[in-house]
Length: 239
Image 1 (tube, one colour):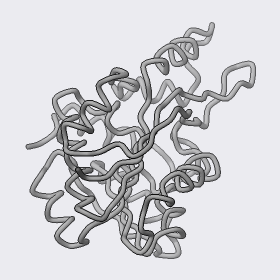
Image 2: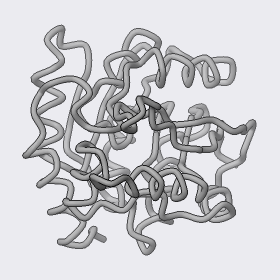
Image 3: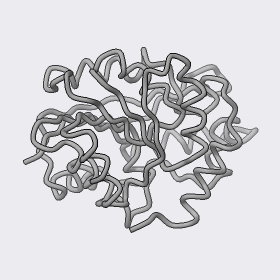
Image 4: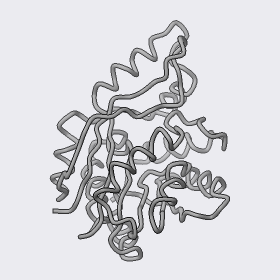
């Protein structure tokens, strides 16, 4: 199974045209606003002596923080260009990064065979995936967890579309970082309110805890207001 050529090229194009400057990607927020609070939600449920796999790691900003909280950290992303960014930024060589297509079940299983049961961190991947690929993405989470792993998954809610529309409606159009997302054909907030928990359960995952949150962006509106996108988080285990 594979993602569409359009989807693959959209992500390769985005990351190929992104510099190594922290925060240039609109979602590349400082860990203090993302993986730090996310880890505080996950760690009471997780065995930190197990590895953690960051699915859709991008340039690895959050993965590098996760490496300070778990015994081993692995970042994977569909985009070769993203992985190249991540490896350049990991000057301390604290993280393992590799290209991985989450809808390729054989590749995901091979990763789990190498790592054993793992914890999973996944931030805003399902909503961005094409609809036909979302069950496989949820299935990748379940595959990697095994019996002992626990997952933190955060996904945008449909309310984010309203925030994005408002951000794009200014007299000058979307702010520059948001415009880049649209220009590359990326489609945020594509999943419905009920779709994400249904996908997770259908993949054999049990929701241990959940709650509302916001995915903090690195872009601001013309009046200086930071763009925060409504989202929901889930702590998950295999059934």
